[in-house]
Image (cartoon, rainbow, N blue to C red):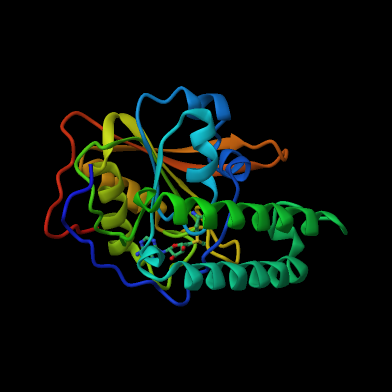
Length: 249
Ligand SMILES: C[S@@+](CC[C@H](N)C(=O)[O-])C[C@H]1O[C@@H](n2cnc3c(N)ncnc32)[C@H](O)[C@@H]1O
């Protein structure tokens, strides 16, 4: 499944290395444990950050490969960045509670404790099973065409518009579809940045994807926390999109 292309990757200092647990992934992407357990092939989590998806999904019989440039760093450095991300998140939740999943006086603490647990699971799993954690950076991934039954991409492409402009977003989305099976799908969220501002060129991106024979849908999903979220769902139509030297919007 792993090709020798694009093993080089440069971790971005400005991007938080967050540590979400499996249940939060399910809520954010509109998935269930049962759906993950029933998948006919492996899942790609890109970016994986310090999340526990790969560690926790195994217990369901679901194989997850996480890809992230941070995995090129020593594990101690990834752990330090994940702890720093937790501190940033605690400050951000205190400053703008309406943007985050657990408003209310005590619930932010409980929410962040779920990140602490996920971070610990990630640390043990990535030390024990390093082959599940591949150092790689979008928009170029070292996986073969159609390798994954489901590809998830959370809190990167639209969350950091200063790093991912429209051309790079398009190239990254095409790449995520390339590595996903023709009968599988790519799910991307959130569709807004860290200030809650929606991506203003999403329609243009979707039009450009259509030109590459990639069908897109903005699906409203509801998580166990009672909130509804918008998820971009992509599928290859007909022939699988191949990697090309450049992608234009
Ligand atoms: C906010 S975290 C999201 C992690 C996980 N998906 C989650 O929801 O908790 C963003 C991650 O993107 C990674 N990242 C930064 N640049 C990247 C790139 N070009 N390709 C893939 N991942 C990248 C960072 O190292 C960081 O771990």
